[in-house]
Length: 234
Image 1 (cartoon, rainbow, N blue to C red):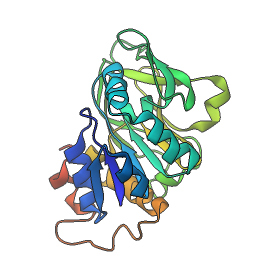
Image 2 (image 1 turned 120 degrees about the vertical axis):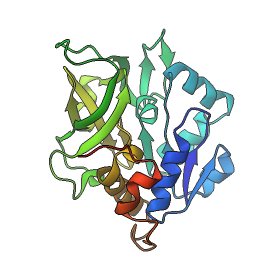
Image 3 (image 1 turned 60 degrees about the horizontal axis):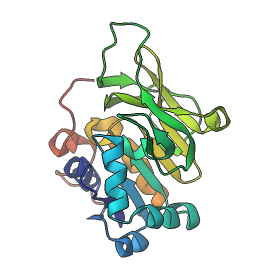
Image 4 (image 1 turned 90 degrees about the horizontal axis):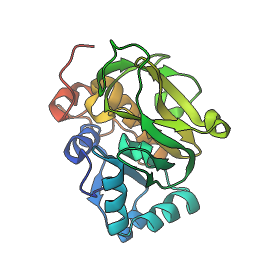
């Protein structure tokens, strides 16, 4: 079972439905005992960094997350805010402390070309710059759906943890990995075939088995648009 953390700031229904489309059991929870029983943890999120971290603290999830992921080595996938939370601090509407698992900050997107608007919203090519199991079978430039106004800026010593970038008037970190910890700035649950393929790769990493084992007319890659995928021709 994969635990999807509910802290009041996640795009939970689309995420749950994406895993459902792949036949993978999930549990939406903020209970630390459920996290301990899970085989992997997914932390989605939309909204403001500071409010999201405050909610994680109010639910007493900071310690359990570190215990399950850092100490026990449980696979972790952070989506959008779930990626940004990994760094030390965010400059979004003040200065807010993150989980501190990665050296770096969250900063505003500042495109060098005014034709690129903020927020960065819509489909964008992602350039895979380092081998990463999440992108297996997706080629060198898969397409994903983004919605964000702030970006992760890693410290130089963590540059080797960037696995993919995208361009929106400036280079933006699209994905990171070290060990079994993964983070993506885009929304795989809204990215149709590409997103489901990425999530199926994550499922395999968790040991939950073949992502296609329970494929039915209501599951598998063909169900993406019916389970929260953004409606767009790609």
